Amino acid sequence: MSTAKLERTHRLDRWMYRGGRPNRLARIINRVTARVFATGLKDHLVTLEVKGRRTGRVISFPLVMADHEGERCLVAMLGPDTNWVQNVHATGGKAVLRHGRRETVHLTEVASTDRAPILRRYLTLSPGARSHIPIPPDAPLGEFEQLATEYPVFRITPANG
Image 1 (tube, rainbow, N blue to C red):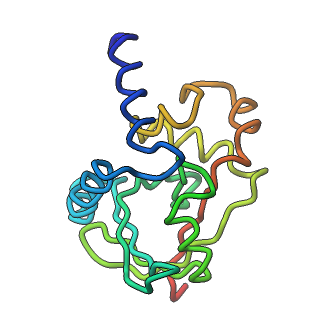
Image 2 (image 1 turned 90 degrees about the vertical axis):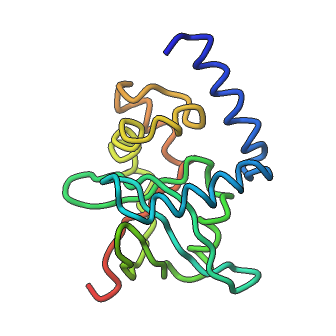
C-alpha cells in the first residue's frame, strides 16, 4: 500500500474513532462486522458479547484475537476507555466469544509488563489496528514495552476451566 493511501486510511480510522469512541458510521460497520466475525470464517476474527454496564443489554464487538504462547488474548486497540473494556471490568471478566460457536469465557487483564509480545502478535494479525497503535508490527519488543500500559490486553480462558 502506498504511503499516501496508508495515511488516508489512518485519517479515516482516527475520524471514525475520534476520542476512542466509534461514530455513527463506525457503529454500523461494527454491527455488520460483528455478525461476520461471529461466523468463524477466519481463525482470529471473533465477536465478543458482554453485558453493558449501563443498560444491562448484551453488546457485541468485533475483535481480532491474538494467539501467543498457546494462549488466546484480546487487545483494546483504542485503549482503556473503550466501551468493551469498561463492560468487561464491570462484569468481572464474564463474556461470550462467538467464532462459529458460542463459548462462555472469562477475561483476565494481562499485566502491562507482559503485554509487549502479545501486542506485537496482535499487530501482525490486525492491519486495522495499525492506525491506532503507532508502531510497526516488526518494531523491536522494547518499543512495544513502552506502549504496553496504553493498550489493555485480556487473556481468554474458558469459563469452566
